[in-house]
Image 1: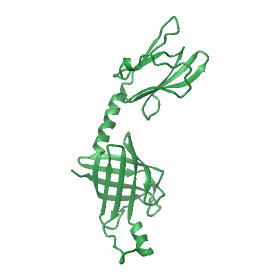
Image 2: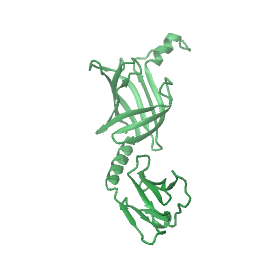
Image 3: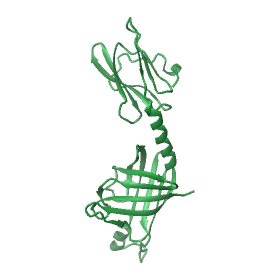
Image 4: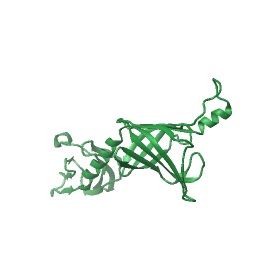
Amino acid sequence: MSEAVLADTEAREAPAGRILTEDSATQCVVTLAGTTDAHHQRLVVAPMGRDSLATFSKPGIIHRHALNRTGMLLMTKLRFATAAVILVMVGAMPGQRTAIADDRDKLVGTWKLVAAVSEDLATGQKTNIYKAPPVGFINYGADGRVLVIVVDSDRKKPAGAVATPAEAEALFRSMAAYGGTYVVKGNQVIHHVDVSWNQTWTGTDQVRNYKFDGERLSLATAPSPDPFTGKMSVRTLVWEKIK
């Protein structure tokens, strides 16, 4: 973020919580957190969407601030006779941002399901989630949206044009599908579900621990009830990228 863009940014009479500036290049947000007393104000510096890296308390009204490309926050106070300059290094942030950005780029695209295994936490037993080899796809869009559909490959087609209640139940119980948005945090990809096949997941965050292995992607759930059996388990789905 250039100093010219931020020159003369004013914070006079600014309410607590006001974002003074944010920068997509450095992925940082500077927020006015409020006053500690009549003569002090606090600034919070944080990567976008993350907890704060640092909080600063300094006298006077902040007249001007700039976030340079090396990740240092420069704050100048002009109101007092003695000027103070505070430099804060966020050296770990660029590397972390790069790794997350690289993984997000790897995710973008369409993946085909090649395996789906559930581990029962009570017994340690691992079983295939579906009776037959599953068929499924997951798509991560560059726009931050995710779409998933998985079905059992031995699903039976209804005998007539309209499925009977029993046929409809069997079809429902042999699939999973949802769509929403996703974000990458650390070694987790978080799917926020906007719509789902069972409605139970709608509005929830489905957290998956992810791992790349060449052209394959493993997504493992946290310990949670299996949506088909209700038993506490960890489900791991392995996907292969479609070229």
